[in-house]
Image 1 (cartoon, rainbow, N blue to C red):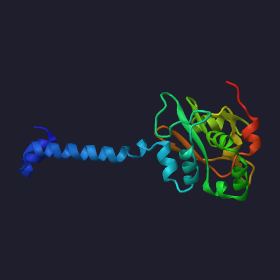
Image 2 (image 1 turned 90 degrees about the vertical axis):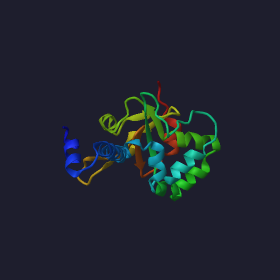
Image 3 (image 1 turned 90 degrees about the horizontal axis):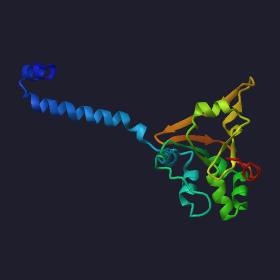
Image 4 (image 1 turned 120 degrees about the horizontal axis):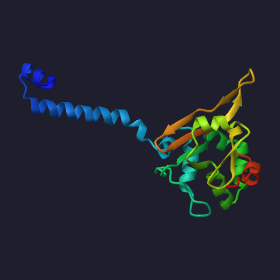
Length: 189
């Protein structure tokens, strides 16, 4: 007799309903444990109170130049990396001036310049590249990795923590790309 059947016999239960109950509990437990792993970049941006503005602006983008990666989908062997400016950066005086100065096409480029799709972009590889490097975004500009680094008081580098999603990574960036970053740092293939 198997362990479940012995317990069922001792308790006077039929072993079939017990097996079904145990199976249902296992499925429910697995579903609960894997819930966080299924959260996409879309979900992370939408639910994080610090990135709601970037998320809403991104979702409102209309058709235009540069493909807009879907934040809900998995992109084959490639990973999404979103460098999302936080709400306070977008709402700052500097942020408002910058955003009001951009045309519709420049606005699209600005938002899409915060998104990269690559097979080799994870936090460890970005940290190895260092603060002087850039990552090619979907618009072709190089997103400066210096945006991910800051200094501790002792002079050592501190790297922003990325939030893992099932289809990529989200960095909450406390500052904005400048117009110089946006229009002067094209990266070759």
